[in-house]
Image (cartoon, helix red, strand yellow):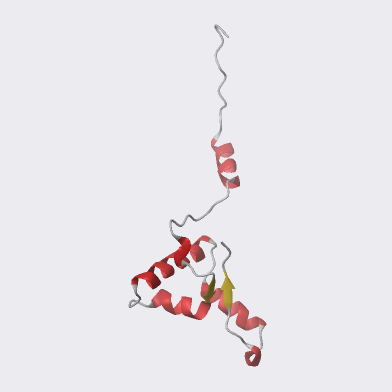
Length: 100
């Protein structure tokens, strides 16, 4: 209406921080086709340290590093937890399925 000014919402730093904390976080992959639907953790751990990987394996390793950092887990920690849970004679390779 004529002569009225629109009121602006003022957001404090505390409110802004709270709102930002509620926004879900995600990792965007422009080509997540380089990730397999299953990963074998011992190979993932080995590949993180290797320097002789081909381009496809390097891309996969980089993507998995980002994914593990994002969820604040390491493949070593997951593997150690699995080894604790299973008796040595029963131990099977740990495979993680990735849903798309």
